[in-house]
Length: 74
Image 1 (cartoon, rainbow, N blue to C red):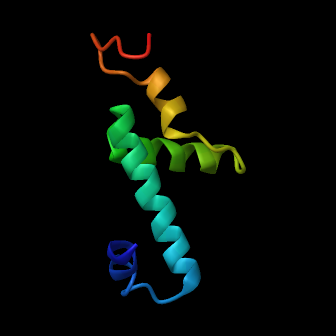
Image 2 (cartoon, rainbow, N blue to C red):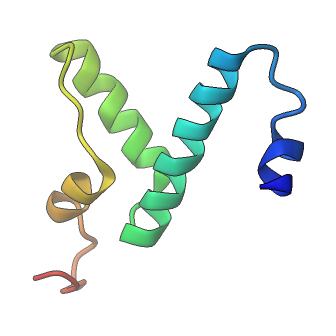
Image 3 (cartoon, rainbow, N blue to C red):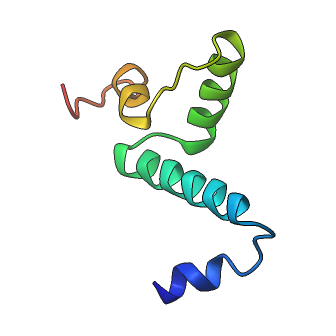
């Protein structure tokens, strides 16, 4: 709890803190799922522009974007 509180000292608003927490969670989930966070964020940003309201979670992204030869989850 203390580490989280210290990490959010620089947030300028409660909403900014919530957005940061969501981003941290998405990035850590990407890492756990074996997905490149940058690739995931680019894909989801483009998907949201094409079809607003659609959300792709890192787990869903990982199913369709595994590196060649990687059989985890298959």
